[in-house]
Image 1 (cartoon, rainbow, N blue to C red):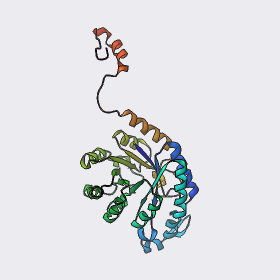
Image 2: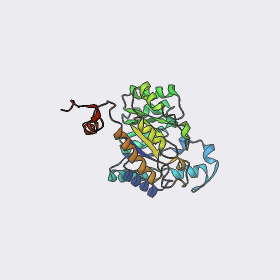
Image 3: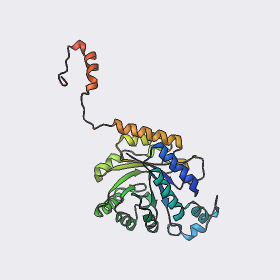
Image 4: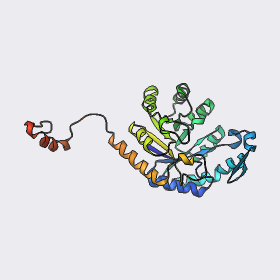
Amino acid sequence: MFVIGEIGINHNGDLSIAKELIDIACDAGCDAVKFQKRTIDKVYTKELLDSPRESLWGTTQRDQKEGLEFGEKEYSEIDKYCRGKAIEWYASAWDIGSQKFLRQFNCKYNKIASAMIVDEDFLKTVASEGKHTFISTGMTELDCIEKAVNIFRDAKCSFELMHTVSTYPMNDEDANLNCIPMFRERFGCDVGYSGHEVGLAVSYGAAALGITSLERHITLDRAMYGSDQAASVEPSGLRQLVAVVRKIEKSMGDGKKTFLKQEIPIAKKLRGHLNWECDEYS
């Protein structure tokens, strides 16, 4: 199972926080960390950007959103830092310009955020790169997911779907984890899970359904500023999460029922009154 620590914008525009979150992901045993990249004037309207919003960076929406956005300098440092830590990193772009910006770092993976799965031009741009891509499926129905799958298959680009519910935080009763085997059967592809719930139990349930990837938002402290913090996992929880899903993965086996050699002495003891003998390993 490929485990991703979703840093997103939980760094709050502070490179030192981003590095601390990378350290936490490494310590917990994550395979990768993920960020988000936006071209502010492409993703948001001028009207919205000019509207008032009190934040750590000023009094407008533009101040807040630009304060959260990393540029080339910050991502170059993140790239260098992750390479030094031997952990993969990548980012979900929210516009074609941001996707092209990310190409300079030659990341191994791409990510389609749930917000972007409806943009066919964007999907084709990402698929044309030929990198293994994680496709989140929040806020969609099957016809939309099928279009995305077809685009990636037509481009011969490796991908996997990620079952996602785009509420922050997500209520446990909305998780609908049975979509995981349904996606696997319907689309004939690997399926992961991108979770936004509070706690770890739902992610454990997803792991037991055989997901190939698990993505959770991570944070230093769920009480920090930011819209994603409440749906994120703190350091101790991340360590527990990774340890348990690795154990679940190991315990799943191949589904073939066998009589283990280790069971023979137990069987001889418990079936002694039956005059039972085992010929299988004689």
